[in-house]
Amino acid sequence: MTALLFSVAEVKETSVLPMLTVDMENKENGSLDVKNSVENGRPPDPADWAVIDVVNYFRTAGFEEQANAFQEQEIDGKSLLLMTRNDVLTGLSLKLGPALKIYEYHVKPLQTQHLKNNSL
Image 1 (cartoon, one colour):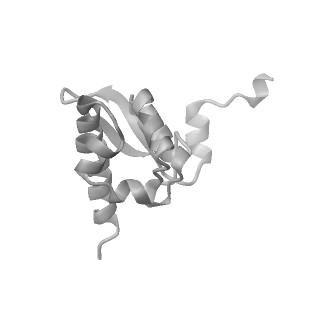
Image 2 (cartoon, helix red, strand yellow):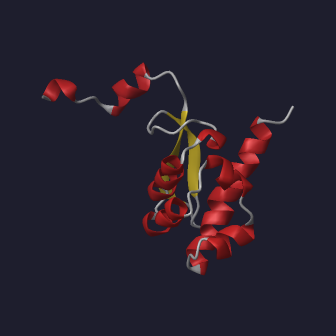
Image 3 (spheres, one colour):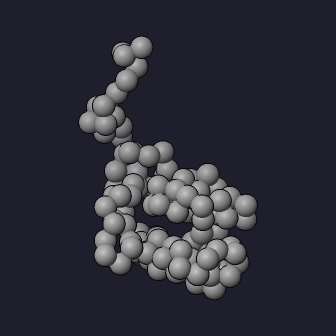
């Protein structure tokens, strides 16, 4: 059974696809660092995320309770990238504090990075 266990270093060395991960060290403003890694199973481009990828992204970012709203509303990566501030603040029926953090520190940066990566 121990032969099936892999260390994170071994997984990083054998994986070819870069993936997004969240550095769980919170900044003062409540945001989290997002960087390329191979530590999760999400595609690197949020536009390719399934609903479960979006849900897992927010769970990993520390929004366990709020992540369920994305699942209930069937928000996949393409939908996430189309969301406005108002959609997050009112359309998901979230408490205002977490909703503001989700939009400002996660949705908006993901949208910005997606646009930078896909512009000519």
